[in-house]
Length: 610
Image (cartoon, rainbow, N blue to C red):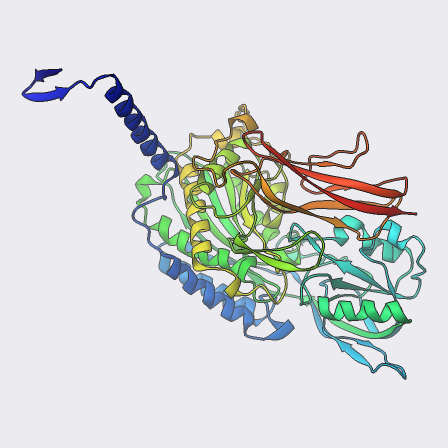
């Protein structure tokens, strides 16, 4: 039927036609809605994947200049060169009040170190390629017998006599970034049982790795305080030499001679800071930042993020001040690898003064994307996943989680998970959350993290570019949010609300936005998980965590659950710890539940001995 109106013809379709057109109409409306919600942050981007890569390459080049185990951005020349590079780029970007804030931490520095396996009539002397863990104790021509303690659980130490000996302990990084000894208590157990030194041998990475084991002394009034060093010398060892040492120990006794001489003196470091004033409509601050120090090449940890930060600062500087509803601070912080309390994180918070209660959010830029590699179960065989590395969201409110999820969905090309609220990792552990800030972090740490194999070729330009777009979406959401909203719903337990500020009800997991274009059809798949130690004993901890999963959406904190076959011991933690008090064969199951409630379970059998 046709009717005339204002000289225009309108056609009213018949029943079937109306059904088809109605469907088309709603598809168009939905597509426009999802475009508004999930599209790229701006059509006027000031950067490309190539421009980020240029900075990334320049920063990795600085970190790599010294070569070998001397690579890295520490309290050294590379640290100063990196700070100068970031400062120079921020001065060109349009940021205001670009500056360095200097502080004086304690500088623990290994001047000389070596570990040699002593020879005998049947085998020659063997010098090991080791790297000392920062803030540990001295050794001078220390000769001792080596004892192997597996992953260093209480059960593995149970029958060992380690007094006066060096303990060889296996090392894996749980979820790629947590050293296993932090869960097993291996280092403390070595001290308690009278060991004189520790060697941590990687079980899957062909490189020694970096980490602190003691404290250089917390920063107070911009100066490092009294150090608390770990009392024993501790060295890291790559997988190949670790396997060789384990093999030698399986055949006969082994002795090593080691040296570790260090200096301890006042150091000099800087945080690099730039600002963008808001339009005055909301007197709050958004802080965007991450650490720029590294152990070695530092491509994933954390120079890709610094390259991203440089271009994000330029992007937001290009937005007219009248459109920025909050003040913004961009900060590159020195010293996370050596302890957040001991370095630039504490110094930065001390400088903030009275704006601490006005911080809408600290957006941590860390681990900004890489390709994925995983060890299948516990075979020590590393395989590429063909996807981005598994990534995670860390926040202090479900409202921030919702914002992060919306930012992640359009750009993700690999598995993502959400940690429980107030799980503080990376730069978020310590002074920044102690200050009470709402915080948000999108993070990936591939399996070669903290080693010489953290190289640029493991990260594509597109991966860092997509993570940059995610973070820009988040920042736009923070800029345009209602006054006090993210401050009022925040659950950071250290938060001190400003006078007159009333708490608001936070969102809940049920309110979380769903992926508008699910990454996977059907339920979760490709599940695998890790178990340590490999030899389980009664009444001794077992640690389990997911190695990989593939799902349609970002997993919630309770999406992964564990069944240990014992009433009351099941867990919904990402990393779970249990024990068995009766020997025999046991089954451990991991179940992944997606956002539609579909479940997939994988089970492994272990043998528990006395």
